[in-house]
Image (cartoon, helix red, strand yellow):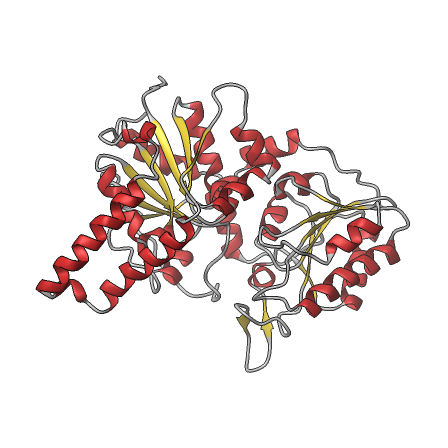
Length: 426
């Protein structure tokens, strides 16, 4: 298979490192096929979060033909993106574009905003605007004006819209779904999702009429990718008396109050110290967990440290994981690492799955990829059970939807390569 060095792939990143994390195996495959990889960071936050992640940082800074990262932001970018989005949605919501006089005014304003945005695009990429590039963007961009502007700037390119993270978007895992097997590989815009149930849920929120949906699982769950992560990671100790433990933390915000966050941290430390005399506790903070109660623990206890490793890397080096409700639990489960979900969905019920009038659960418990612990007593018992089993995963009831998702992930490149083949990009 020949390499075309003129091919480039452009990924626009706006929120966090999770977007790059999801698409990274695809970009790596393109890189190995001769594509030049460009990352356009539309905010300072996403730029910082990428370089704070060890795996992503190492990938970008590889010695042979490193990935090109562009800072497509300024001091005013955050405000510009927010208000241009509000302007764009307002014109659609109020149907103002159909009023002749007002329509012309809005066209002038939009032309002005569009050109300000184009000034953020590197000249190096503008030179390729007539080429058939591969362009990746988050699927929420379908609601944002810059998606329209980018498509006008690169009219010959193939566009892919991707998730923020390996989330499972639906709450009802047992509903019926239909999947169209006849994919139109001749269109120029594709929606890449993990599972058909994701599409069934998201199409109520987004207009997907101009994109062709493809359900290819999560590329980073493919055995090939996971094996590469394991090979490059520090081996876990696999010793029940002196384990490596990973905590996927969550800070104060929409899901946790300061009191709830403090309770989870204190209880985690207490439960671990009750079960082990020696241990190494690695904390993976949430990207938006700036001021954390963990800071006090890290300063006082030399056995507790922060890790900048990717969750997959950290999981590969851990005997078991404790999650404060995170999609990272699915990452660890895919690595065959047991995960205790220490979180009470009845107390922190925001965006949780409602079972009845008063009871809630989490999507990860429904999927069967975590061991539930809603309080410190349950956490202590879960840790003791894992210790007695030498940290092997017990027979968990894994939902068929999760099994389906993992199976799709093994073959993600088959459909993707068909798109490249149809467009003479192989």
